[in-house]
Image (cartoon, rainbow, N blue to C red; front, side):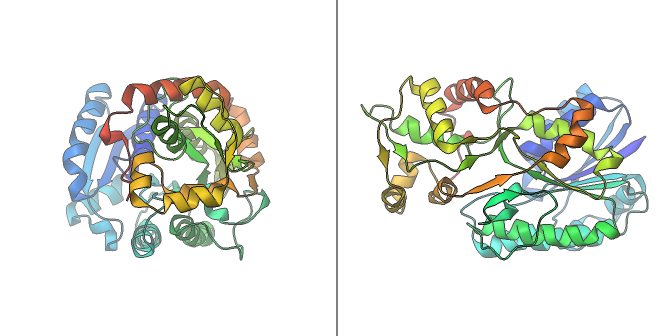
Amino acid sequence: MNGYFFTGFPGFICQELVRELLLTRKDVKAVFLLVLPTQKNISMPIIQTYQQQFPETMFHLIEGDITQPNLMMSMEDQSLVQKETNYVYHLAAIYDLAVKKEIAHQVNVNGTIQVLKWLKSLPNLTRFIYFSTAYVAGKREGKIRETELIHQASFKNHYEETKYLAELLVDREKENLPVTIIRPGIVKGHSQTGETSKFDGPYLMLNFLHSLRFFPLIPHLGRGEAEFNVVPIDYIVKSTCYLTHSDLAQGKTLHLTNPEPITIREAYTVLMEKFLKKAPKGSIPLPVARTFLRVPSARKWLKVEREALDYFTWKGSFDCSEARRILNDADIHCPSFHITADMMVKYYNEHKYDHMKHIHIS
């Protein structure tokens, strides 16, 4: 029987990963969930749901902070975790494309430094799963392989840069720790239910279309030739659960990206057809769109971050052959965007007026 420790609760990926592990593994003895004190109240009902559904597993909600030594856990919690933990998942991070540099560095880089120091105190560590992002590639172009990390290209935002710096730190520990680095693409809701916790990433397109729904003609944004690498949450968590316990994944960095990505233009066309029953007409040059989105009231009306436009011209493509090679044995495959778009739009339609689902746009 094993103990599993998670940072990043009650984030969407973390919640879904815990649930998937409990549904598919019979060896989950204890689950330790590190939460900021401010997140404790919203985490408790989720834990209670887990406890009712999985009474054989012990659940421990632990207050802490990844940016502090020993993750700011109490001595009592630290002692219990050290004794019982075999698997650690580090998901806590700032994912906002518009995040300020100092905040991103404190959480994404300094937080990872503290987690790596703390891991050395675990005598029974079997695997450390670190959640990075495929976009540590920054402004690199062309084919980007799982074995590649270090580069001299710059970054589109502080999120990418700080996740890159953090992954460098984790990568250096592969000789000392049983590490698997996961690099997801752009995560969206469940492929079969559409469920998601936040309308960010690909949902910004739907926000844009919703704001312009009464316009007789809705244009494309730029040429839209960039790769749009979107992966549903269920593919991410199923893959991660399998990779956690695969000897082939130890010491590896793996792209959980869509092996058959589409372009931004294709995705925009598909979503507009399913959401508004219209086809795009014409195109707005990206410089014009960027200028418009410099105005705070325009960003808030459209519910779109200006930084998202930087991905419309990026010419990179993710190779995920190593991940595919391992996951093929488990028959885990990423569904195409076209197949999952219906549920994505349906869920958005059902919750588009729920303010809790929308990210804050400043």
